[in-house]
Image 1 (spheres, one colour):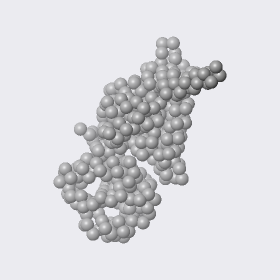
Image 2 (tube, rainbow, N blue to C red):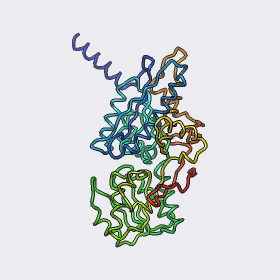
Image 3 (cartoon, rainbow, N blue to C red):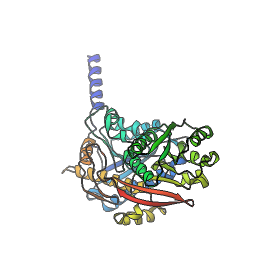
Image 4 (tube, rainbow, N blue to C red):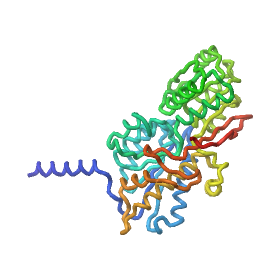
Length: 401
């Protein structure tokens, strides 16, 4: 009897672990957050987290669900030794999953962190909404299917930002308009950087550009003399970088003048779009172009109230992904509110996922937002920016068709 009782107990425990979490008890709802909040990427990660925090504070002030529930932010840092770390992101996801009060996660910023987290949040049937992780492989293709290991047909990861393929295509087309026909591509060999570089390469070739070479950086590489000598020998009109500031983007640009490439334009995606890039690249930053997979909120009438509220609350300027995080959080809260039972019980996590997936025509600071069957935004917007005289200037904001 003792052994059979133990077997029964173990069977019940395993069943509980493999089934979706039931509705949490109590009157506190937690929204988990995972971003790089220390080290080199905190200058981007914290403004994004602030956008989510503002949405939570406003929901509480308005009396969420008739004032019956309080929303709390559980904000975790996915940085290790100053850099974003997929392993830390995965641990953060496990921590948030382990708290039954957490009904949604906002984040992360980096695509390789998202890649480590999605199998976990999919297994837990916990909605995860990223305002900034842009790699195509997170939502479409065989890569996305592989991440949904526990529930292959259940999309639990959503994003309010635009995909890398759309950034790559826009940058290739812009290079064409500038008559930059010969390009050398470099990436940081990480999920986001590879994805973006490959997307740019494919679009560049279809647009008639010539790809002179494609090289990958080693982790923690600091000296690019040999690589830049090779690039200079190819005589490019443009150097394209797939990656982030901290994985070599800024140092590569900083060292280009030493190889005679100081006047060659430098293109990249949102991973280098920061003041930290300007600081590290120094005077060589001029002539850099990048896209942000979100709108410039200062050019959107729909974002006027958000920008004013953000400035008042945080005494600083929001970035494009701040508004995307605010929107993601609003959508998560709307789904939670929708799922509250007539008896006042909170919804199960799977119910929140279903209601997030059903989001259509949601009015937000970044426009009218919804999600397609893959979890991607139905209103993708890109901002193209240029560094000139050590200042970042917006060149254009446009909706991806």
